[in-house]
Amino acid sequence: MDDLSTIRSETLAAVAAATDARALDAARVAALGKNGRVTGLMKTLGALPPDERKAFGQTVNTLKDEIAAALDARKADIDRASLAARLEAERLDVSLPVRPERMGTLHPIGQTIDEICAVFGEMGFVWAEGPDIEDDWHNFEALNFPPDHPARQMQDTFFLPPRADGMPMVLRTHTSPVQARTMLDKRVQKMLADGGSLRVIVPGRTFRTDSDQTHTPMFHQVEGLVIDRTTHMGHLKGCLTDFCRAFFEVDDVPVRFRPSYFPFTEPSAEVDIGCSWKGGELRIGAGDSWLEILGSGMVHPNVLRHCGLDPEIYQGFAFGMGIERVAMLKYGVPDLRTFFDSDLRWLRHYGFSALDVPSLTGGLSR
Ligand code: 2NL
Image 1 (tube, rainbow, N blue to C red):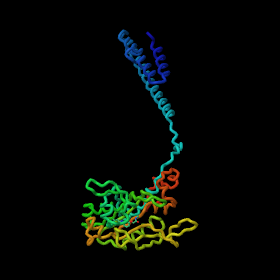
Image 2 (spheres, rainbow, N blue to C red):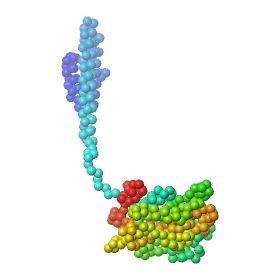
Image 3 (cartoon, rainbow, N blue to C red):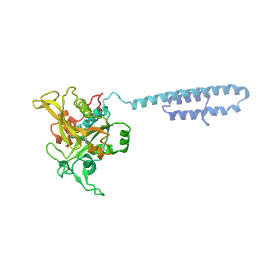
Image 4 (cartoon, rainbow, N blue to C red):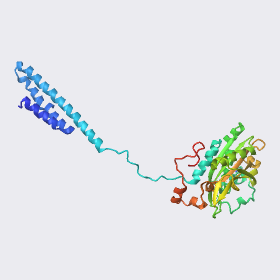
């Protein structure tokens, strides 16, 4: 049998030499395990004479405590070292600049729609949408288009196969059928009957069979509608004047209302803003020229009637504008057709940051 001091020095040496948890555990088992050397010493106690037994027992216990303490201390060292090694191996340099990923841009048409809806949103208008494929009734009949109106003729309208009930179907030629559907909505009629006001702004795709330098078969419109019992032409003028100044971000831009004709409004007016041309470049603001921006008017009694509203009770105004046209004027886009070319270089030049959401308080365009 080994003597106590040999067991002590060899065990402490094994503990000190252990560099990982497994080696340390082997040293523990070799000394303190069921068949360990210190455990073996304990087993010899019974064979000792009683007068030696107590002193030897105490010595072995002291050795046991000493080894246990050495094991604990070594374990703490090994844990600390392995944590330090992991921290070193998994080090992240958070000061490194991010990889230069190029961000996408918002298309100027979407940006312009968002800007227009932000201005009208601030005035209490709500956004509405509807289907691109419409029936003849919502696209024309409800809107007081006489059967022989030019916009109904083959050259302007994309006709689709008729519906099962025989109703002629079209790609909508304007967004007005969405306003018609809104007025026909029973919840809206209840709200109006209860004395409320309808203020709706309707952006969307529209389709006509035109295709040349200044017309594409698909284009975008925003139309608006206000209905209650008291809204009059003065409100139309104030609302659209405020819109032009806010949208073009020119406080003192002159606004002119010119008599016009639309089937769904009476009286009707086109809205122009002041501008000037210097060296072929357009400047919006007081000047010697005018630019047509909007069409507008008081909603025709026939339209109200068709949409389930009594024209003896309700009245209001409506307006519409072409998005491509106002986007070209505001952002200096020279060619209409480039909007639909999907040219990435063009999109990077004319596109907008997705992080700049248009608002009157935060700025419409940046
Ligand atoms: C333009 C002219 C306009 C409307 C659209 C409208 C809709 C309903 C009732 C009455 Cl449901 N009017 N829309 C009214 C006047 C003009 O648009 O130049 N658009 C590009």
